[in-house]
Image (cartoon, rainbow, N blue to C red; front, side, top):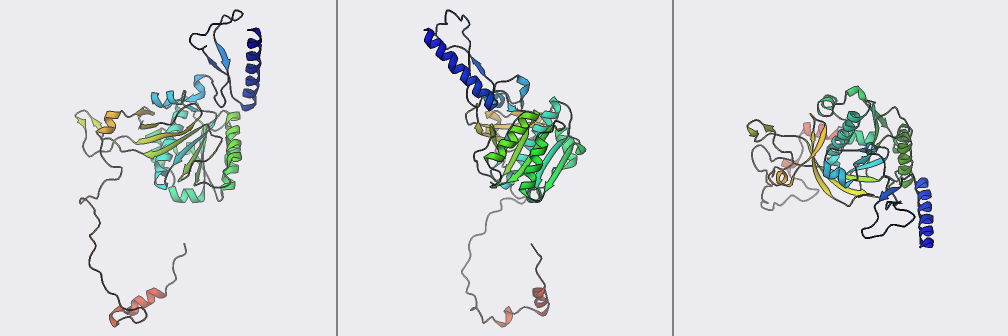
Length: 336
């Protein structure tokens, strides 16, 4: 029994040393049910270390307000860490940006109102655009001059700015937005971002538009898409045909403490907190994300008869362009 206890203490000491090297903290677990405590150690608590799991104070995690999601993530998103937020398609860029701004709003609500830095390449800003300034305050409680932007011509420049900004404690959070799976954004680059976020005690959100999952140093990866909005609630009940709060479909793609799962969250701009939509609310909301045309269903026209065209190289007289059309044809095309 003594040899077993000594061996166990040796293993625990090695695990603690590994935890210090990896930057994780030990986790306390209760002894298994039915196990008899040692005579020399009446306390049945045992300190063990699980790889990749960091147990810290509750304020080390950013709680979204959706209890089931927060409990699944063992307290919420880590504040001092790199977190990935993925959009499967380019059209999900608005949902990804809205979710990131919601998280930034939660950070500002809980801590000092420091500025936010949003970093991206010229390509991603031209494709997805910028957040609407007037909507920042109304929906997220963020002042327009509180959100700073850094537009870099190349990804290598954006990564350099992100690494330098991630170590600054004068920023509430750093948002880095990229597109696809660039070669430079590899495991080494994400390790540097994650290490700087841990040292500064600030979150770094990596927004990836139209990207596939790949190995990174981020402890958590969330996959975002827009969810159908429910009608607005009034005193008389739901208002038909109206658009309620913004909603997100959140899928846990990677987590060191949770299994994959999917949640439908609504952002409450008044309370500035997420609320999970129940199964009943999801079932009774059949409205599509993109409504049909105003005149009704816009179905494709049925195929018509096959037409015979004139032979190539011998156009008919009626097919010749007019003098005005010839001049238009000679104009140079617009670059790009």
